[in-house]
Length: 591
Ligand code: GTP
Ligand code: SPV
Ligand code: MN
Image (cartoon, rainbow, N blue to C red; front, top):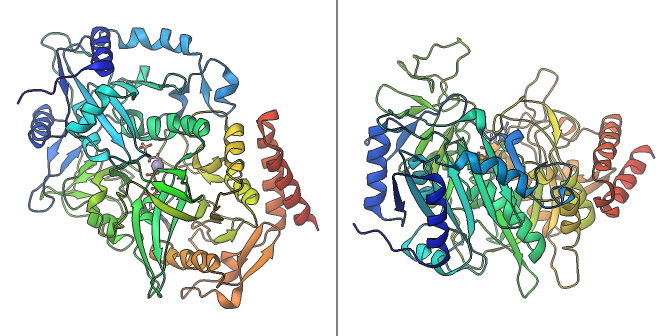
């Protein structure tokens, strides 16, 4: 098949990158089926992908990464702005010149012996006023097939990228091949990995990793780090949020967006199967929301993505039927176990592991050996259109109207199951004050409580203090502001057991939020916000109101003291409203 001819700015840029990286061939990706099939044939031949049993898992593949390339690497991620203060105290910073001086030699000749793929993609429904275009150049065919699931790629998008401005993303696994050199299954270069963002020129340069957010540059790099910068300039919001529709027993529907840190329950809530009779939930997006104010002053949200890059371990028929339904076919599984009949397995998928299992390291699975079948950050890449609970407006160019915003984190104690902010400003404070235990989604220690404002700590492309200010600035005449809530599914008892069943039962919390919007649920005031009134909030069997709504004043006081220290990081970039909320809550805790 003849390749699409490039023109305009795209052609010029591709030639420039080709000259720098010296690939053996260049291929433009246009979303055609035969191109996709050819890529999978190549990936199977190279040993990067294994086709799964088509009777069990049609058109699906398994991939095992290099064990040193399994998650995002936050200490190798940089925001490169002329002035350091614009990246702020929470980002790694390099000046654009210093960073280009560092990455240019890395990229010089880095695609030798490989094909350079040009991948124009659209974030958001095609034709939507809220959609944006990007182009990822990569030497990884594994990245290309993932991008084909995760983003919208068509001939029209290629044409659009020839005539319109686009976000420029350059990616290389960082392992050129000399003539005759045999490739490895998962080429990468952990030693030299760097993921550099240039918001002032809308560029991303990513080198050395082939995994997830390090390599699928449309996702965290474009749709969050660069988009948050654009959103600040243009008055909208680019957020690490799921989007879902909730319908009550009377048939009234409302949309909500929720922000939890990585591996803290976004995909699971987005695809929730309601355990509350009469209530229904439908999925619009599971990781990223772009939200814009329309002429009527409504906050409209689109999911910029087209697929899910979901956490595999813990996903099961029992915990989330809809997620399991989403990954039945046309999916890529990375770092999960392989069964003898050519299917996949991970911890939690079923109660007992199947006989003859092979782990993600390619070794026989031994129960109790401490070596899991799946890596804790093993993932599935699946088309969101396959979600059984997909919302009818998931691809609506005008987005869906958001009536509630939910923040949350993974905390064993102190933070109650649900609370409501009394005002927009207090809600923004909830976002700014978010804390959560670290997870396997990023390289480093797991289980350590850290500040993760708005679940954007690793993803905000500018000064976090200015980001708080941007959120506060949404409160203005003509804007119909959503109500703001904060949830915690992860409280534990003294024996270390979760006190809330979570998953489908989270619908009770969504229903309370819905009813609060309808002014149909009772709340009581606490120093840290409004919580459900005990006698009117129906709990699932075996749960205890007191355990779900602890009021640990001393615990909260030390949270606030710690937050005061954290806020000091932002200096004069911390908006006064955040300090005022902190003072008010601290005062309420002492009275
Ligand atoms: P990223 O894709 O990294 O952004 O993660 P995510 O926020 O989409 O998290 P996901 O829904 O994949 O859940 C991460 C882990 O938390 C999985 O192991 C889930 O099984 C677990 N989890 C999700 N929801 C709940 C819940 O309500 N209760 C409990 N106890 N665990 C949950
Ligand atoms: C996250 O870590 O929040 C993810 C996975 O969604 S990754 O795409 O690797 O960033
Ligand atoms: Mn995420």
